[in-house]
Image 1 (spheres, rainbow, N blue to C red):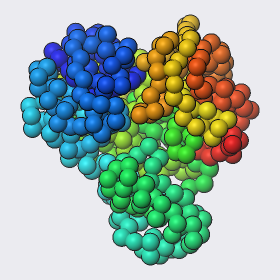
Image 2: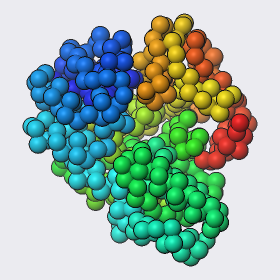
Image 3: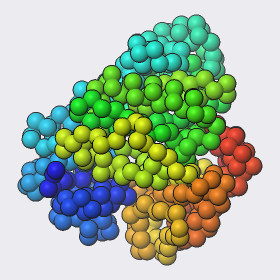
Length: 447
């Protein structure tokens, strides 16, 4: 087992990794930008290193600075968290070439699953259903038009690399396809430094269901059930829950088996997710695999009783999975709400600024993952996610009621947050009935 790990991230995920390491008896090194010098989690790390100014490209995305910090603090491994460099194959390769273990899959596996076009072809070769679309990446809008006219509108154009909903456009006709192609290409180039695109048939009113994967270096792969991530705004998840309220056991088993099949064929190791769209007829289609710990991993932890960050670390240290698929059990229902520093009344405009009073909720079955506190200043330099509230109850109805109560208790003064909008969603009759899809927010809560 490692004795010292560097965390190449910030915010709530940095604190989450520190907590796991402390319980494992592992020392931690936290890196931080000048803007994050007052971050609360720096108090809990065994050592801290400033890696540069506030902009991410000069700190959290600066590979040489992070490697230098790792070398001078004599760490054995780096945990990338999510975002920033977590799915950067070059970073994984640099870590290992410097004799530092990257807590995640190999660079080659990241390249394979990170290229959505290649990942689709892998799934197709394994007999896993995929959404009809381009077999390869697009080399121009004329090719995109030809494919779209062949499979029929609507279609969706996606960036081959990256994620987070960027570089994606839905098109319903020739004109919107050309405009969408140009816009997606520019956005992908800016976000991922890669303008490669591919095209799929747009599945209308689907659910987004992902399976949590764990895989060790000896080829053992299991899944830890699914998470329903259908509540999204502009492809950004807002509410996640486990289990999916409409999955019957036979369908869950088929999707889980396919998720394991893809991860094994990709030579994947560590924690990751295999993601599917589920159409109104309960037909499922593979869409992508994410090579990192997910923001929403706590809901899986709540229903399985497993610590996914600890599992990541054990796998990276060369330990074999102790669980087999038949050993995985599930208890109750868990729901997560992401709290963002945004103003829903102003089209989700970011709301940076200094927090006044901050008082998180508590009680049985309530978990809050956050890095904010009274007096902390939310920066405009980073993502607007400031907290996650996770609840666990025996039934979905009681979990929803618990979440409403928890959000009512959560006091965050001085900035705008998405809490009021989340409360409205949790009270909506269609959500309570489990009748949701990826267009739910736009349909009922557009501003």
